[in-house]
Length: 89
Image 1 (cartoon, rainbow, N blue to C red):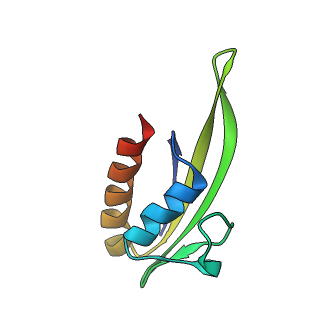
Image 2: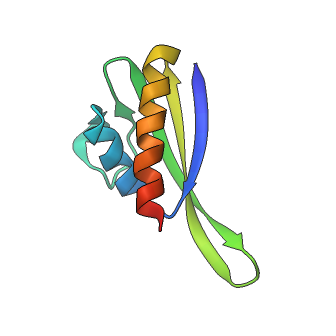
């Protein structure tokens, strides 16, 4: 199963840290790097881009692509989403 979700108001570094707190290991060990985060039965890729909101405001939008079995991804995505919403402000 593959699920792609986007979040605003968090950084790639913070997304990787959240995923590592949820049981994943950051490939390369560096939250600032561009490696995936790997759990026992899931994998997550993190990327970001600047998006324009209105005429003068830009935000960072972080996209996380989750891959794994549905039974592993459902609770992971739920917990990650809760963490990301609290961080966003």
